[in-house]
Amino acid sequence: MKTGLKPVLWSVAALLLLVLLAVPGLNLFALLLMMVPYVVLYSTLSRRAFMLHLLPVWVIAGLLAGPAVLIIGLFFVVPSIIMGHLYRKGASAAKVIKTVCIVILAQLMLELLLFELVLDLSLLDSMAEAIRSSFNEVMAQNTLAKGWDSTQTETLIDTVIHMIPVTFIMMSFFYTVLSHYIARRAVVRSGLEVPAFMQAKDWRLPRVLVIYYLIVYVIDLFMVRNSESFMSVALMNLVPLLSYVFAMQAIGFFFFLADQKKWHKAVPILIAIPVLLIPPLSLIGVLDTAFPIRKSLTKQ
Image (cartoon, rainbow, N blue to C red):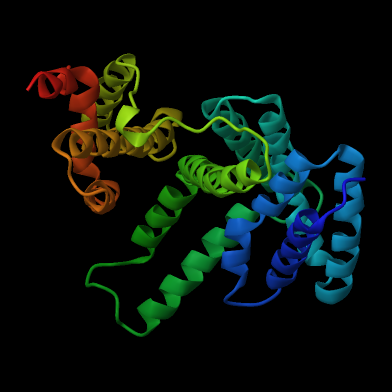
């Protein structure tokens, strides 16, 4: 077993994060960092040493905060082990993010299924009921906009539920990127070489995505809305998903522009905020992918 202060400190960090899951207000912070200690431990220790560090952490956390935190912790251990394994193999950052994102997405979908089959609890129905109850309370107080009725509430519920796939995809992606960003730096400081993701200024999407985007956009433009049809639900997820993909490309373009113009590093970061919040700005990413704008700027 590998000894030393660093593995012990990361084990303490894992224990602290598990305990914080039971503390309101701090549990969100704990969730955001949950994978990092496990990734570092698995990357820098042997499998046997990793288990020897993990078991006491889980025993103590279970005694202090109850078994519920262990169930949540187990969810994050699986993708953490996969990320750590890919680090040890020297896999590219793109492969790490793609693989771990798919694993987290699969786990989220599997949880929905297990809750319904094993516990006879539909999280989708619970979500719908929570939204319905909230709107009924507000309607009873007459604080909703005029013309809002139960039919519109049900339409909103259908929309929220049908957009769960794209929500899960985006959650999986951003969580994976955040975990990789932090964990990789910690692992590199421990002496293991882990390939970095390409710089934002070099992000480039395949041009064929523009064709897919145009096809989806045209179909969505002329299609009659019917929340019960498969095509309508698919478009409901594809349109915002592609919009965010090209928003990321737009952010990469502004980082490229900042590099060419020698702007301050904070400028493209500040620009990224409205690009992510205002969907039409993703068209900048579409244009950057479709046309050789960067070549013309480089020539200048």
